[in-house]
Length: 366
Image 1 (cartoon, rainbow, N blue to C red):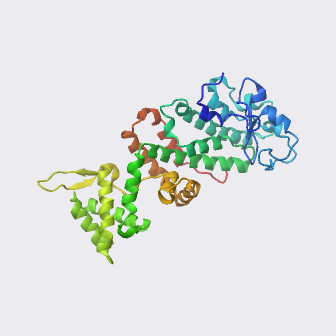
Image 2: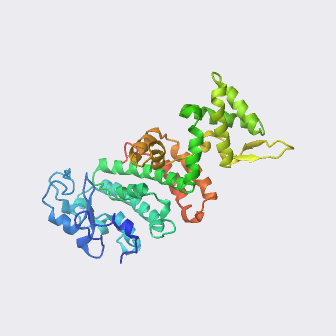
């Protein structure tokens, strides 16, 4: 019997052709994902279109030569979202013993197929506690929900598609990690903080490269001094980075220092009339001083709507570095300490993120 799933998520768990909910008990309604287009349909609909060469949803070719689509394997990662895994068959041969496509694989290919399926199955298990509980559902943005189910609706019968899925799993892990960080932040405060960072007088903007220099200078000065007052810190940074126009850069430096102070990055020490401050131990490098903002928030801030979310996400992805995921995990750990959610509810994901951050796609993955 399928477990209770909120209605919003069920739209991702039904046939793309007939809209019938997927089931395991009735073989006619088990999910099968098509290659290339990755639409998932029930076996009954797959049998109906078995002689076609293109998906009826978007006319995209299946890309599998001379192999009927009704020989494709059942999508078990999707069924894991719906069912207790103990109610589903274990092992490749038990699951796919009647699947001609799978049975044609050599042993090595079966192993890699099952490895990818296992990774997707773990994603299904990881998200179940969240999508089955209203208290936690706000953790995922709509964009993240689409990403998760898009990945679960993957077909990985060939080497190229398996490599693509493995790369997508790591990317999803990084996006999920950042989504949790964003969820722990106050949206209005984040937007105000962002405006404070990039806004200067006369409607100008401080370039990202200069923002980086300012933050690195703050880290450098506070490493060399046990503590500095707000005024002294701003003055020191301005002298270092504002060689050509110290008066022009001072308002921006002041805003950044005030932002960090308002966001509790500093530990303030009272010393007579002065208030020297130093960075808290968890924020004593440039990477941890950076803050995250979602593609949706960037679109709203820069364009006044969310229509440019995909474009903003594309830019974020291009700017991502190999270390971005590891840095996000550190922020995720810090965010859990002050999260409005019970940290033990989502802290189990931290070791998963750490594994994925080191995950690569070697050339000999097969």
